[in-house]
Length: 194
Image (cartoon, rainbow, N blue to C red; front, top):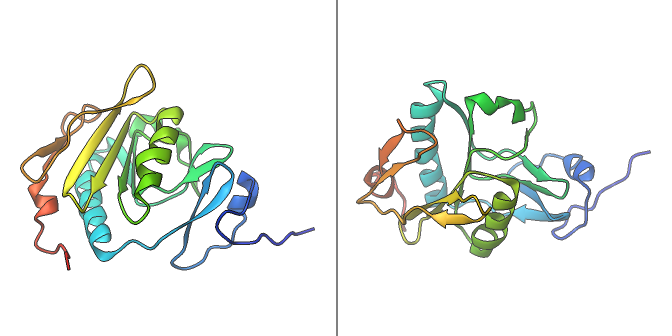
């Protein structure tokens, strides 16, 4: 017997019910502690920043065979939490968490580009990523033109490594060869600011 699931924000779902939701063009869903969360469409500036950073990570990490880099895809963190970060990085030696339809377990780096509901990324997702053991959580703020890489400490809490601006270079201890000047991101000629 098939049951019809109500697709409305706040609906209570199991992980299995969540994965039975029909794919809808242009709509992204996440499961937040068992509640359906509908993710707003990203604005053009958000998309441009995500696209540029994804391209840089892919060129330096994926092309070298060091990691897999994904744009939003379901990442199952627990029975009640499935999120779709803007960018996801998984070290090559941890490819076992990558399955055909989604990732099961914590990626090595997640990137969230702040948008309309900033508290979800700054509070809730920060807690979930830390609890799941994601080693690095990068928060890209298009309004402030900053990128803040957070590193998971031995105590299970994130610590800011820095608050980076266009004058800085993005690096990560997870991939020592990765280095990108952020002026190329924040001052990119294709960036849409109006």
